[in-house]
Length: 100
Length: 184
Image (tube, rainbow over the protein chains, first blue to last red):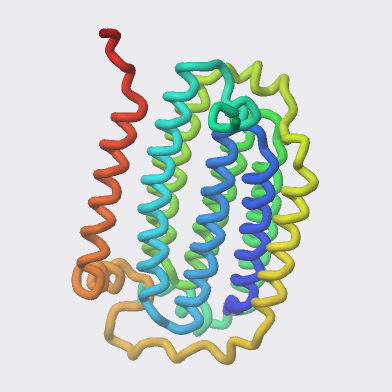
């Protein structure tokens, strides 16, 4: 029997790792991958609560999270491609056009 | 009708084994997440995320979310990660690997992430009470395809349609953004 509290702790740790990756990596694509890690951490906690409450709705919500993650990946990588066409490299530190 | 693997194992005296399996999966997913965030080669990072997604799918199986586990492998590991790898291959990888992995502000990012994880850990220590009673015998098991499908097409029909609209908007938006502008 998997305790629900352990699922929540695992979810918190995974989310923290994803957050560290998002804030400190320089590569734009790996920042998006870190967002995927964070979304997965949320899904773990949703599934844990669904198990704890014996309620289907947590898993349905996790399915919608996966759908939104797919949309986010598509748009984010489209942006990376468009960016990479105009300039070499995908380092976030080079993207300073909006700064004045 | 007993597709609920976790409930079956709990009733047949495998509870202790399942707990050990859960702790293995949790440790392995944390380890692969750390490796994914810290590797220098972006392709290695994405492959470690693939390992993370497989282990998380195993955790979904253990918490009676069988359909979610299948979707995790098919959509996340199968579609999204292949897409990431595909875009990664279009970039100048040797040049990416030559530069620094982390920005100069990485201690701040690490502190923020550690602080957030510690807070969430602290907040999740509250007592959740005993798990709710499983649904009565005879109905579809929690997390099975029948149960999830029924909920998706009845109670959640409108959000389901909205999700399809979001995906359509994402497809059209991606094509518009990534299209090569015609020289005029």
